[in-house]
Length: 84
Image 1 (cartoon, helix red, strand yellow):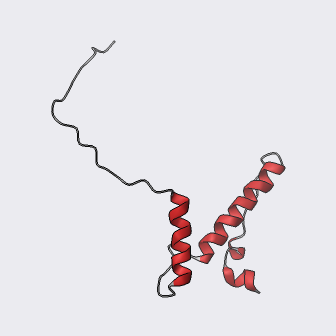
Image 2 (cartoon, one colour):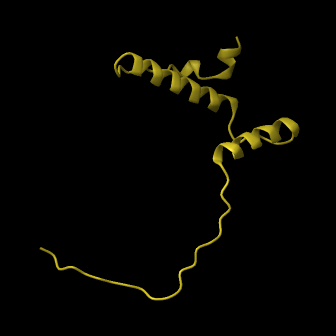
Image 3 (cartoon, helix red, strand yellow):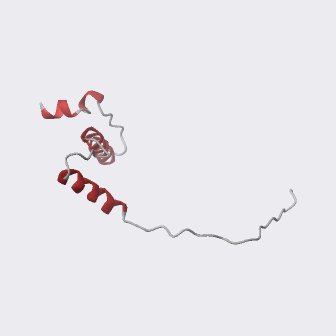
């Protein structure tokens, strides 16, 4: 068995004051800011949002089918295919 080793440090501990903000509130505020100011670019694109929705839908189908894998066709993951 290895010998127990103890180490310690002495000195001040500095804890920075970080303002907490709800992540979903920040995301929604950014979305609203992009709508109000057309010069702002969204952090996430519409295609990224589509990929998230399709992934969640595939996960839901998988759960309903006892965990069976459901693959997402990459060609369906573009906004141009959705808008047609």
